[in-house]
Every structure is written in C-alpha cells, then in structure tokens.
Image (cartoon, rainbow over all chains, first blue to last red; front, top):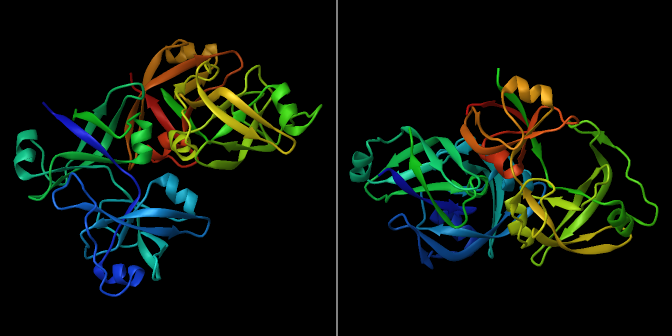
Length: 189
Length: 189
C-alpha cells in the first residue's frame, strides 16, 4: 500500500529565538498549544501580522520550536493578496526568497528574505522510505481521488529520523484537489 | 497536437438583467470593457461586493452580457474567506448552491443560491471537439508541465457553437499548477 495521509499547511511562520524576542519581547519563549504530525513540532498560541506592500494578514500562527532561520510559509493566493514575491521552495531554502514585514505585539521586523510557498513534499522516516522504495530528494507523483481528482507531480520526498509519514500541501493545492482538513493520496510514480 | 491554452478565472459574477437593475439602478445596462476569450463574453467596468457571514470581498467584476441566472464564481479559498458554502459545479448548475449577499451602488440582493466554485472545464466549438476526438460532457485529464507539474483529472469538455478552445481553471487550481496569467496543458487521457 502506497497510501499517504495528506495534511494541509495553512500559512504559518517559523522563527529564530532572536526574531521571536524582537516581536514578542526579551526572553520570550514559545510554548506548545497543539502538537503537529511531525514529532516535536507544535503550533504555539502566538500569532503575528504579515505586512506586504498591498495588504496585510493578521493572526498568522507561529510554529515551534524556534529554528535557525525565520521562514514564512504562505500560498500563492496569499502572496498575491499581500503583494509580495514568494518563490516555491523546500523548507529552509530561503536565500533570495520574498521580502516581508512581520509585526508582533512588542515590535516588528523587515525581512529582506524568508517568504516562500512550500514545495509540496512527503515527510517520512528512513524505515518508511525503505518500505515505500523511495529516497530523500526524489520527486514522486501522488494521485488524489474525488470530485477534483488530480495527480500531483514534483512531490519531494523528505527523509529524517524525526519525521513521520505525511504529505503536506498548501491551501491552494488542497483546494485544487478538493481536500478539506485531511485527505489521502497514492504514490503512483 | 492536443495542446490547450489555459486561462485563469478570477472571482466574478454573472447576473440577470433584473438583478443588475436592483444593484445598479433601473434601466442599467452592462457594457463591455474587455473582450474575453469566449466569443461575445466580456468584462464590464462594473463591480459588486460579495458579503458572507465571515467577511466581504469588494471590487468583484460583473461579466456580460446578462444571463438568465445570477451566478457567483469564486474559489474555495474565497468561500472560506467569506464563510459561505460554494459547491463545485458546472456553470449554470446553481440549484442548491451557496447563499450569498451582493451589494451594488444602488441596492443589494440576498441570494438563497448562486455561489459556486466552477468545475474545471475546456470550452470548444464542435469542429475543435471533433479534431480533439472528445465530446460534450466527457471528462478528460490535462497535464501541466513546470515547477508545479500536475495532471488535472475531471476536466469537463463543454462544446458549443459560440465557444472557442480554452481551458478554464480557478485561481486555486492555477496556483497549484504554478500557472501565472495564462498557461498551457496537454490532454493526456
């Protein structure tokens, strides 16, 4: 069985401890409100406002724990709404990505880069990769059934000890495939 | 060659002459501002505000000429933003579709139904259908290349003398496929 659970990533922000403190105050610490499917990752209760040249979006969730890069993951729809550039990138590949302003309760940051649209991908651990016969960095095709059936190509396999099997789409992709909340797909190539 | 031009339908409204007059005033007439790809169809300079229980969207374009049904075509992203239900339907199939309020400069209308997310489709005339070996009502698969390559399934063929060859996607679908402004695809099944 090559069936994969599909989760939808709504717009969110990962940030460095340093940027967190600039937005939320000195010594501020993220704390978990809700565990996510990837072990150790969580949604915090904290939110920021994304500010683009055209418009802004409030209540954008900060995920934890803090990382060594501040990264804003939005959909293409969001990028047009904000009026910013946001290239399609794998998480962490933010060099030359979109500029954006973040506003928190205690401060703001003008980022020269950091805004991306996440490239669609499947998280898994090495055991799961072996079982599925795929390897890290490989791109696969995933078929989704239903009223808006389609086959996603260019779905990147991401393997790490800390990952657990789940495919991540952004909201545009989920809507295009008719997926609400969670879905499932089959690796077909 | 089964290559098809792909156009993106941003949110828009078709309306009856009666509803037009309720929103824009007695005797109001739509006039073309920009011709669309489908012969006789045009964007008017007029816009309305879509009002849902959660939020509203301003400056939504009215397309002409007037039709015998008032129909609001939005994306799933838009439907979540507005807080309304909008099922995936072929144009014209609005029975039991989403309720929404329209606000114009001279009045407003509470519609019990009319809001849909357009089912993806390809317009063509009978000669083009014959050439492509497809028929009205058939569902085909269309492959899109690029960074967000995918194969759309459930793409409905719509044949009419007044149509010209073009595939229509909504903004979620176009974004999911990495299409900006216009794109192209191949019928692959």
